[in-house]
Length: 492
Image (cartoon, rainbow, N blue to C red; front, side, top):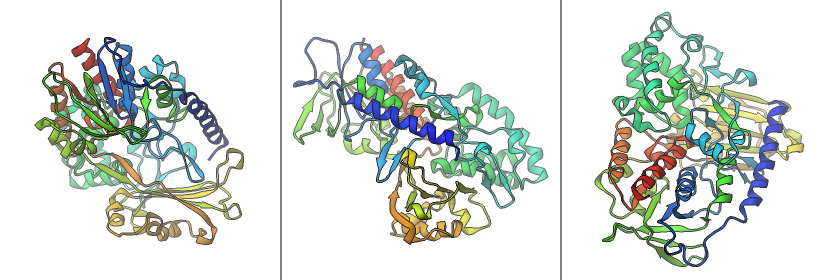
């Protein structure tokens, strides 16, 4: 990896450390959460980008706002943190240039330049020499947000018949790009009628459809842990059609959420136990544990639930039938990643890597999404390591094995990087985590029904987050801002 990338990483760390110092003084309302007679009150649950974006807009509109966050840190998936000897992003690493609401918010805060970044096309980037190997050759298929037909035609192994049929896709791509906002998938309900796999099979035929799924689409879906034959086509095609670049923010993935944290009343280490149904005035009571583990409750005018959707069913009492149906259909994929940190003596002398399709004829490579060996960089306090990401298609086999991720993946990385020995390893970092929500066929219509229901008029409880917008940080941000506009319209 080039020195510019290391330099950017160091600048990002320095900025975030400075912002972290600034957030220590974040104001939290003492005593009672809200003052009488000073505008409507709102409790926002969850200090990820959806909750922070909603809280920022509500506060600007005159609401008294308090944000409850169960973690000791703010930012949700938009954070960089120290994990053992490694510093970096454990969840989201970058954003899409299609994220209009996110960049608009950053502009309001005066940090748009820090949230924007240089284009970096996911893992497969010819500038870094990282290609995708499908067994026929190494190629650069583009990232999550790219389905350029001219570039796709260059994939090795495509049959003449597939090459002939590919232009059939262009009209649909143009139509979806013109009508669907990938940050607010409720705009794409008309396309929530079949899976990604079914779509390509229908448009290209079985043989050609399988080639495109194997050599292009499967790898796009693998980035988010989706099965092409279960995932709604609009969830992926909305990005492929937009052709918007994926970028690493200049200030790091946490620049936006750190800035909001410094300006908003976030109460960290505050765990919501449950939310009771509305009283006679339409207000809900939030029961929670404060940072001292003391039981508290508050009944604001508005509750914005911006937690991960998987917690809705157990946290909120009295969900509407539509909300309950959505909550039961909301679950996350796993992202299995492990780092072996090496001693300096056995560090890789140069950056080396590999990425493969799940249809690769080599059974070990077929199980591998991506791996890399990284030399140490003492000037940036970066130890040498080997990183391995298990294919999402093979993740269930690991989950059913009852093995630690590092033990399961050890023979796989040894096959790809034989010089690695356990005696060289000084630490192991497990970065396995929940990845993103799954968006099966019909889910987008479910989220749209929930949003239509909560827009009908003033209420005391609103949902916000990626589970009602789309599976990425830009969608979560757009959801927070959109829901805040609905609340302001109902209450102000």
